[in-house]
Amino acid sequence: MRMFPIRLPRQRSTLLALACIAGLAAACATPRTPPGRPAAALDASTFPAIDAAIGQAIAGRKLPGAVFHLERDGDAYEQAYGTLSYDDATPVRRDTVFDAASLTKVLATAPAVLMLAEEGKLDLDARLVDVFPECANGGKDAITIRHLLTHSSGLPSGLPARPAWHGDAAGHVLACTSAVTQAPGTLLRYSDINYVLLGQIVQRVSGMPLEAFVRTRLYEPLGMRDTGYLPLRRGVARAVIAPTQKGPQPGTASAHTDLTPGQVLQGIVHDPTARRMDGVAGSAGVFATAHDVARFARMVLRNGELDGVRVLSPRSVQLLTTAQSPPGLALRGMGMDIDSPYAVRPRGTLYPVGSFGHTGFTGCVLWIDPGSRSFYVLLSNRVYPDDASRMLELYTALGTLAARAAGIGAAVAE
Image (cartoon, rainbow, N blue to C red):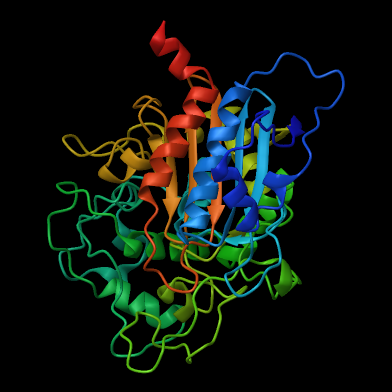
C-alpha cells in the first residue's frame, strides 16, 4: 500500500488559508510526490475538495480535528487535520488515537460473534435465552442471535441511566430485564442493548473477557497495534488520544452525569453506557487509529485475510457485509449497515446500495464499496467539548468525494 501526502492546487484558495489558520498543519505542508509512483487507482483531483470540506467543518467548529483515509487497490490518501481540541493547539497526527464509539460494533463485537459461529461454538439462529436463560422475560423468548446482530430484536434503543448503576453484571441485569416493544423480526430499531448482550455472549461462550478476545483473535493477528479497549490501561499515552466530552457546567442537562464540571474524557470512553461498564461493552469502547481501521477494511475486502493471516472465513465476511435482515426490513448485514436510514449520509450520493459500513457517535465513519474495491475512514472528535455539533453534511460530502475518487462518478458520467 502506498501513502502519499496532500496535493494542493497551484492557486491556494481562501478556504485553504482559513484551514491553515484553523490548525490544519498537514494540509498546509509542502506537497511532494514520491518518485516512481505508478498510475494511481485514485483520482487525485478530488483530494483538494476533501481537504476543503474537512477544513471548512473545522473552521466552523463542527469538530476540532480529524484523520481521513481513502484507499482503492492499495493506492491510499491519508491526512490529519486540525488540533486535538479547541483548548489544545497540538496538531492531530495520522497516528492520533480516537474513540471509535459505535464502530466498536463492527470492529469488535460482530466479528467476534461470527468467529465463534465459525468454530461451532455458537449458532447464529440460537435464541438469546439458550445462552442466557435469565433473559426469559419481557417477550424475549423469540429473540435470536441473528436478531441482535441485525438490530431487529424489538428491544429498546439503550439502557436507562437512572437509577444509577455500575458494572458489567448490573448492565446485564438491565439488558436482560428490558422488554421488547415489537415482536422480534418485525422492526428495525438500532439498539445498543443488542450489542451489549452480544458482547456478553462472546464472553460467556468463549470464556474470555471481550477485550482480551478481540485483542488476541483480531487486532494482534491483523497488526492493528493501536486498537483496543481501555487505551490508558494498555499503556497508550494520554497525549496522543483525542479528547471527547467535557464535564457539564453546573445546572446544564447532560447524559454525562458522572462527570464533574470541566473534567475531560481523554482515553476514557465517551459512551455513558460503556463507561458505566468500566469501558468495555459490545456497543462501544474501542479506540483506534485510521491506519488500523484501514487494515480492518482491507481484510474485509480480501474476504477475511490480510498479509497471509486469515481471521474470518469468506462466509463470515459475507454474513457481516450483505443483507441478513428479516424480510421486509431495511437492509443490514450481521453488523454492517447497507441501506438503513443511517446509511444514507456516509454512503454519499454515488456509492451504490450494496456498499456497506458503519458510523460512530463521536464523529467516525467506515464505508466500504466492494464493487470499486475502495473504502474511506473518518475518525474525529466532533463531540468535544459536548455532543451538540452535527456534521451529517460532511459525511455526505466525504462519501460522495470518496466514490468520485474511486472512479464511480466518472463511470456514472460515461
